[in-house]
Image (cartoon, rainbow, N blue to C red):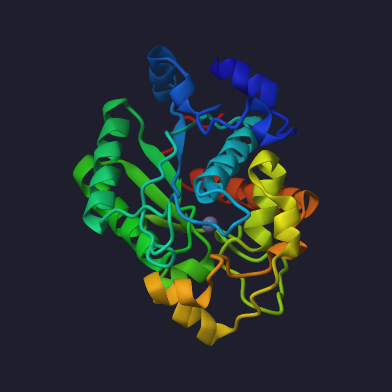
Length: 301
Ligand SMILES: [Zn+2]
């Protein structure tokens, strides 16, 4: 099956949703135990897509973050295999922290201690199977969510010996107050989750705007209400509005009664596809360069 996956997708072409909308397709969840043990023995690295379940406006599903995080890692895995890098995708994980959207229906949140414990226990399972390295994307822009993952990975590294890495955009590293010397944080030029589509947007976009709507539209079109997205006006927010929204819960619900912050009306599947492929390629390049620079990676071709 691993060989089949590699042969079938080595070119990195085709939509990631061609295997259906299952977030397990092309991950280790759809393999058997022998294939997993074989991959660990061969020195495969793991990619672990994280995300959350939270409201994403009236036009997108609650699962937007984990769907897009999964799709990104699926595409990254295809690109890495095309370069000869052995890789498996760990089970996508969608329990995380939602402060901003917590007051809306369908937004789930766990305590930081719970999220850290899940990360530590999952690392122990990776290690038990013989894997040594795992690359994580957080899938969601909430500051506490990202900080908890970074802290959880640091703790899990020392208790399990796994080499865990959180891949972050520079803007998130700065929001977390990290110095850039943390060995378990890898900085990428791929855009952060929820980022605007345009490199220089007129107004702030962080949640369920054109970026996330377009990406979801490209990869999972049946989950997007396109006509509704086209009718939603730009929130036209600046930094003060964003600060108020980030207070979360009822503040966010008052600030954005419809649950999006950005400009969904300019979304399209085509723009989403271009941004998706560009972001996945950047992320794949980041991970390949990090693996190549890591002396402990003995199984490179
Ligand atoms: Zn999102």
